[in-house]
Image (cartoon, rainbow, N blue to C red; front, side, top):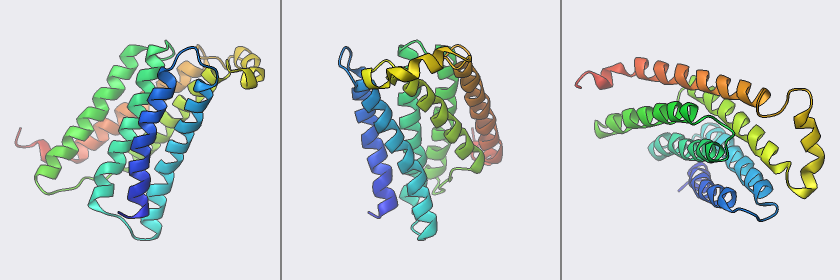
Length: 194
């Protein structure tokens, strides 16, 4: 397994560590640790694709698993933030629906021997989703002792979850819907037999 694919697998593993950390209640610094793990996992998302293209290590495994690992990480982030009351559940349902639709389309293509790679619009969507989740994780981590100095910043200047947070949610949602519709439209021939 080449290095980009190892990074993809590592992102899957880090997604589970992230979920475990944010699921622990009442323990100091778990939210900060969750933020750090999420950021490291997001960095692997950039690195695996960059290294695969730079060193011509693009594989069918990477084309299929890289977007899947992204979806697992992002779905974990959005679901956990919903359980903490920071993102409306209906938005997360729409985002997850898009992710499952695209994954289903990829599986359908894979059954026919075709690998559908991620598109640029989908990559921008992922970047915006990562920014949104990191913003909320930073907000959550601001309750940990060593980051408490950040809390007043969030409470001032409309930077809290009710203002900037909702703006980020809406931008993520719009990009998610746009990229999903574009992906389905470009690959509509795969659905012709349905």
